[in-house]
Image (cartoon, rainbow, N blue to C red; front, side):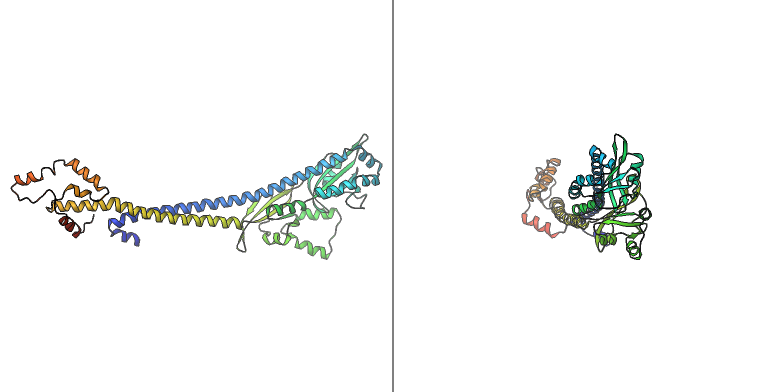
Length: 419
């Protein structure tokens, strides 16, 4: 590589620090890349956790609504006066006594239906609307509760849409009389979590089950209804409820709305905006999967924060590289190379016959002090015997106790000394 070719011919004063800095740059770059990968995984995990938390809360609210409907039905069905009125067929008394309570629960707890069924599962009284008495219920929950004479509760698709119901048997001293059913609408839960989570929520039911339910209640589609129904169909599912139908339909298609009982999460990029979509299986009171709960949420704010953190790490890394590089040049040149170069210069002066005192090695206030002391320890008699050795050998007094400072400095700086 070009940079290594240049370093090959560079002096040690440049080569060594650059090699250290290059290693630092590579290390920091690797650290930033690893941080990016780890933060990317954390971002995906965070989005999964948010979507899973939303559907878990929706599921918990469905269970809570189911328990509320069941407990209310059991409480009313256990009142002897109500059982007696049902036994007598006194619709007027039941309506007069229970209609105010129904209206209050409709306002406070979003109760949508409140009706009594006879022993044969025929409609005996509807508090939410008039008429329709004597019709056999098409709801499997009612049919099973009447047949088994047991409490049933949960989610079921009916004539009025997807409901959360509780159906309780009505008993008196003579035995089984009928059942009482209370229903809450699914759409109220959807509205609640749209506001709480800033997401779009849709509910889709299996198309085959939807058609079977319509056949049971005797509904027939005309051309207008058929066109409307077709617009609600995606693959093998039909749209029942949603917080915003147009938005939900713009985010999903038959490729990601799959016909299986698994929870799936996808993170599409729609119009340059990051979204997360979870497809959660919807089960009925029997535990059968009847459709999907779809939650769509924008995660653009999380991605903006993610890129801000990465950008800050890059800026922080650049600042660290600059600081470390400056420190490397200062430390390496000031405390290592420069003292050694000065030492070599003075040694060469001595070899060329110049009289250099060891004290001169320490005129630079750095590691030369230590080097000078080390030399004195290794050669303790060198300076003391310089003059005696010269006289004994018959040589001229070439070495003096201290050479002229001008000679030393002139000679030292006229010769480039490289390591």
